Image (cartoon, rainbow, N blue to C red; front, side, top):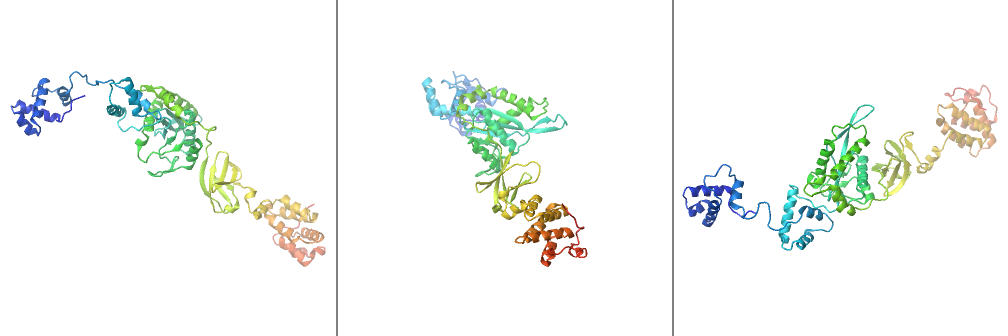
Length: 512
């Protein structure tokens, strides 16, 4: 190491110039504001190094410093005491429970006359600084995985139409071993984002303690330095795997420097090496990306002297938590408010909930097969998800009793009710339903007539029905008039028929 000095090269050059002009050491010291002994020491060094004023053009500041202050007998770049294997020290520091004290003690066991603890720590930090120009974060094995999307995309051609579509590149990097994973997804939306995490954990064969994402909407509903709000669907995935979500601070890319470096490496290995290939499906593209990922993980890291895969197998695989028995099935969570018709909307279709929850706020859990509705943490409804057909999915148990009875109305049900009174009444119901453009338009008329007959002698009800059919009186008011005037007891006459006909009727009809 160079000897300690207090003068700049500019001051030393000025000192040499003044000495060449015959100025005494005392006067030079007074001019430069330094001690006479310092002037004499530096002039002695210059004489020993064969330096005279004016200096040659090739004597730069670096060369001047080297010739004046280099230690004799010590080769530059070499240290006098045995050095630890710094790449090995860096790797060991990533193991759980290992610190510099432990590693220094092991070093001194091998080299009893080696560096003291303080100097050992200084040299370790100096080696760390050579690995990267910014502060290095210490990543314990199995602690964190950093995830993000690459800003660049990869093109995929539709083989049928020839249309080119761009796919996103998802990249993940483990903190301790730097093991890298990448895949292409069509979008950055929740299904693709969460699906990429599921495949990532399957690739790792385990789960780290924390996932560090960027603040994209699929991960963080509301970014905040103090209290970020995690997307609920993303949080449910994390709960399934027992992993924590720790978003990077907004506008702080160094919080996820691992994945930023991984993104750059992935772009070089993946986009750079695959740029001349044409892909016709996402699966074909991901097969090529998987090959490139294996090349990345099998490539030796220059300063650590080992590969990502070997480092992962050595220190990190055992530190990962085991995977759950089943992969996470994607589900999307949404807030909804129950409409007045006791239905909630999900993905363009309406699904019923108990009518007592009208105007209440509920949580929807949407999967590829089911729609579940939760109120205050309790599941209150579950439906098979609809993709076509009727827009409403209604469970009769969710309806008010009056609505349930109305929903159960059908032509056959009214005929069955009328048949219980007699054939003439059944014929009247058939005539009313047939007279309407849509049978449902006659349901209320039939219901009103059957209520008129409630408590009435069946013989009289049958007579009133027969007379109504005979004269084409197919309305509630006409039947009520027949009963109130007692016309069910008299035979219909040709003159009387027009009096009881409703003006909108198109004439009598007879059904057998």
